[in-house]
Length: 285
Image (cartoon, rainbow, N blue to C red; front, side, top):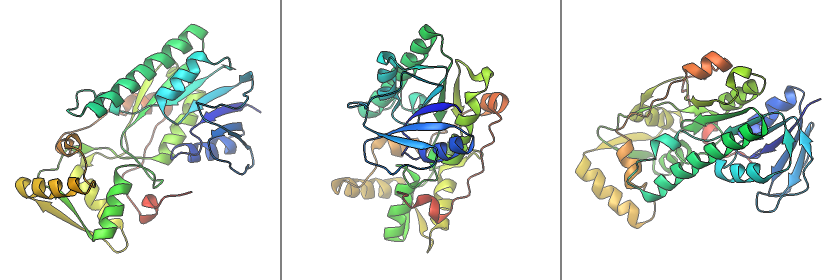
């Protein structure tokens, strides 16, 4: 039986990842800051990157579904030996690198540096590593975009968007990300590669939000506002600390589209189309 060390196992991608690995016969050691009850095939280790518990000297695979920059720093200094490394990053490394928001540019920088550190460390150790970049993640009720939209729309019964919010998006379900992470462990074609992982459907931002609102119980109404009116509403919301930043709003009109063909070719990646249900936006503990 092979053993994997998992970072981010309690997160939105980590939970379905654990289920798939256990089903595949793996023995798992998963890190968590909070105490968690053990489950079949999973041993939870208490700690985080700033206070790690004792770790085994060797495992068959190390998989990170948590913050890439923190994982990269740990990997660069760890003595844990492994035959395989798989780590999730984000397409934000490209999307946010030229953002007007300094905090977003910093996110892109940390992702870029994290990717470079993981690949360089793995290469120096002769260990095959693969980096995975999801697009807009949903499905576990723990994302900061669609779940937040669903929560606000449920509270108000409506959700406002500026007219022309038609930038293309490719939302990707957490289960599809877990599946491709497992697939790439034993896929030599993925060694040393970085893959974009878009969802199975490309649709305008407005349509994406409309589907979320229609899935709610009861459904919420999409309200499209002229730009000046939306700007006034946005200003009022910002005074209450409830509005997205300027860069987020500007991107609603931008196409953020990534090529799934390499992941399809090398990993059999087959993400589902975007068909939201209310359960996808309720936080799971």
